[in-house]
Image (cartoon, rainbow, N blue to C red; front, side, top):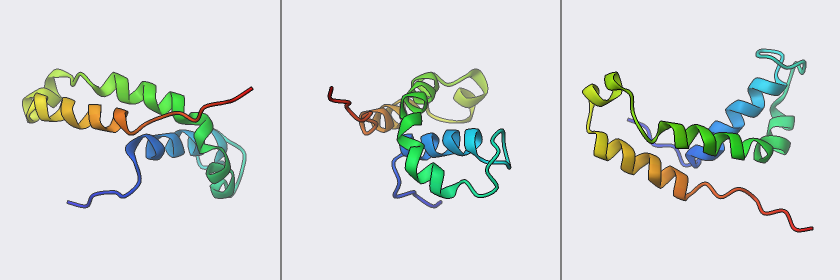
Amino acid sequence: MDVSTTPIAERIARVLAAEHLSANAAGDQASASAQVDAHWQDYLPHAIAVLKTLREPDRAMAAAGDVAVWESMILAGLKGAVPPKVLL
């Protein structure tokens, strides 16, 4: 199994940004990669919300594996997900 070198929160944020920006999804840009690179951090709070939701697996997920390991992995992903601070 491959292991990504990109933190999970960033990967989720990039997917959410692409979903919003790309014409292949809900957006209007034919090539959104530069915009995704520029704006994925705007979606980091949404990515963190997704990870928080995933802390508790549903019944099918729990039946397929170790719930404690799952929770530990999600919590590790959350620990590495720090939204950028805005200084005013």
